[in-house]
Figure 1 (cartoon, rainbow, N blue to C red):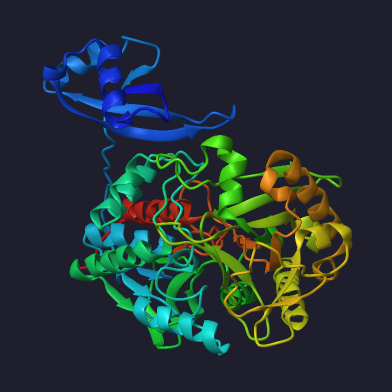
Figure 2 (tube, rainbow, N blue to C red):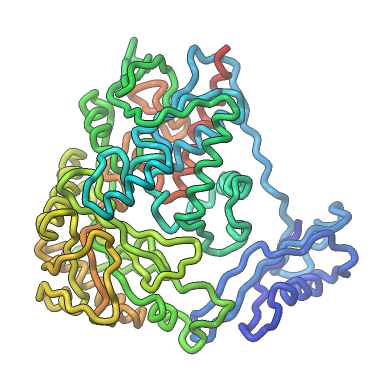
Length: 532
C-alpha cells in the first residue's frame, strides 16, 4: 500500500475526496487503470492561519502489488507501507484453570476478546450489570437521585468510557491500536474511525459495539458473569491460587485485573494484602461549558458552519506558577455534562456526547495536576483526597446529587455566583450556585484561575464570562498504580496477577486501555496454552 500525504484542498472544492484521489495518482505518476483502490487514509483540518483547509493522506493499492515499492520515491510525501499483521504466540505450559479477567471496561473487554479468539475460554467478572440494565440505572439516577453503587457511570459493562464521547485518539503509537480499531470496525463502528484524525464513536453507538464484542467472547467459549465483584485473592506459596468474589470463590492462577479508575474498594483490598501500590499523577477541577457555535467560531473564524468542517474541538494546556499544569481533558463537542457519582453523598462530573455531536453546548474538563508529592506518596491519602473533594461538592450542591456551579467571570473574580446567560448548564440533576474556589485548596484554585485566563488568550470562547463551570471533576485517571514488571506485565509481588488498564495506572482513555488489555492477554498467552 502507498500513502500519499499532505494533499491540501480548500473548503470550496466541490468533491474533495475525488480531487484528493486524483492528486495522489498524479503525484505517484500512476494511471488510474493501474490502481485497485484509492481511498482516504487520514483526513484532518488545518485551521491554524484563520482559513481552514482540508489535509488528506490517501491510501493507494495497485493491481500489481509487487510494483508498489518502486513508487515509494515518487515524492517526499509518498511512502510504502504494509497493513499490520498480528501474530500472538501461545506457550507450551497448559493452564490448570481458565484465565480470569476482572472488569469489563475497554481493557478487560479486549483482554477477554484476544483470549477467547485463541481458545482460552476466559471467565470475565464484572461488578456491575449488563449494558441495558446499566443504562436504565443511570437514567433512573439522573431523574430521581437514587444511586446504585454498582450500576452507574463508573461501573457496569463497558466501563466509564461507555458514557463519554467515545474518543479513540491516543498518543501511544502502539501498532496494537490497529488491532483495536479493526475489532471496533468488525463490530459495527463507523467506517471513518479508520481515517479520521480524531476518531470518535459517541456514547450511543459505542453501546452496541460493546454488546457485540461481549457476544463474540461468549460465542467463542468465554463466560461473562455480571453482578460479581472481586473481594479478595487467595495466595499459596507466593503465587496466585484463587479469587474471592461476591458470587463465591474461583480457582485462578492467571488473573488480568482491569477494574477501572474508581474501584476504591479493590485498591484498599490490594493495599491490605501488601501489594505494591504507588501514587501516580492525576488531576482535579471542573467541567467548562460553552456554546458549540462559539467554539466553532473560535477555531474556524469566518468558515464556521461550513458543512465540510467537523464540529470544533480543542485541547489546551498551560504551565502555571508553582510548577503545575492546567489543561483541558476529554473535550465533548455538542455534548453534555453527566452525573458520574459512584459513592453516596458525593458529586462527580464527567462529559459525554452522541456520535452526531449535535448538542447546543460543548464541554471539557478543566483540571490541574496533582501527584504523589501532594499526598506524602501515600496512595490511601490520594484516594481520600478525591473522596473529600467529591463530598464537599455534594454539600455545596445542597444534596440530592445537585452539582455546584459558577460562571467563569464570577470564578475569575472570586464572587461565587452563577450569572447565567447564553450558556445553560446540562448537568442532569441540576446545579446550585456555589463558590467553586472554596471547594479546592487555594493553590489549586489559583492555578485554575491562571490557566483559564491563559486559555482566554488562546481561544476566544474562553473569554466569555457566561461560560458555566460545574464541579467537581475528580476521576480524570486512577490516583494509584499497581506496580508490574515492564516486560512481562506481571505484578512483581504476586506471580499470576496482571495489573491492567486505567485502574491499575497503565492507561488513559478507551484506546490506550484496550491496547493495554491486548498486551496483557498476549503476555499471558506467551507462557501458557489453554487448560484441557
